[in-house]
Length: 115
Length: 114
Image 1 (cartoon, rainbow over the protein chains, first blue to last red):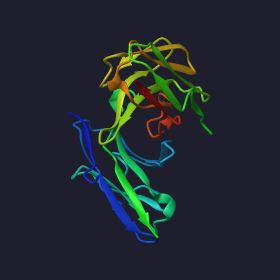
Image 2: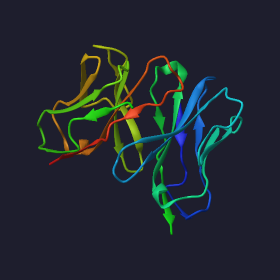
Image 3: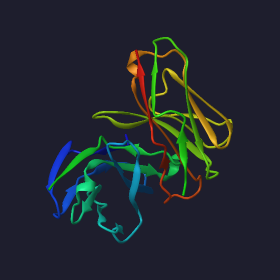
């Protein structure tokens, strides 16, 4: 069965420090994409970063980077220099390419940034 | 920018009512999706659609139906609302053929069934 697991229900980080949010996935499909979304308390889902299963390099978008380890089936999100505005729920999601675009989401990690 | 608009941010209905949640996107996307979000469970797919009048069941379709009469509009219907359908509902859209494109989400509807 295809599944995304986020094992950290909640995390704290000090402002300006880096933090890693864990994500592991399970799939037998050879082709897939991995996405991270941020959900502030207001509720909207904000796309952060994407990694394709055949991409050779780890994805980066500003302060966000994705530590992709295909053999371990992990796709951890690294946020550098945390800001107070980074406090939110973070969701990891997988898109198997043979299933028409739907996403499979993890349970989410609630990140709190301390001043 | 892609805009996905859900008709209500907050909605309160009574048990047994027929409830309609509306979603409209303005980017001519083929794919549209309905999810529900519950604490500790993440987002779970209810239904999705690849094209007008097309629909596919997701992981938790029981108690729901959908309608897609126009490409830009995807409606979620609770045929006879029950208290266990109290949840946050999120609509999303994406282009059909671009694998690396993310789904774009609406702001969500917080639905309470009393």
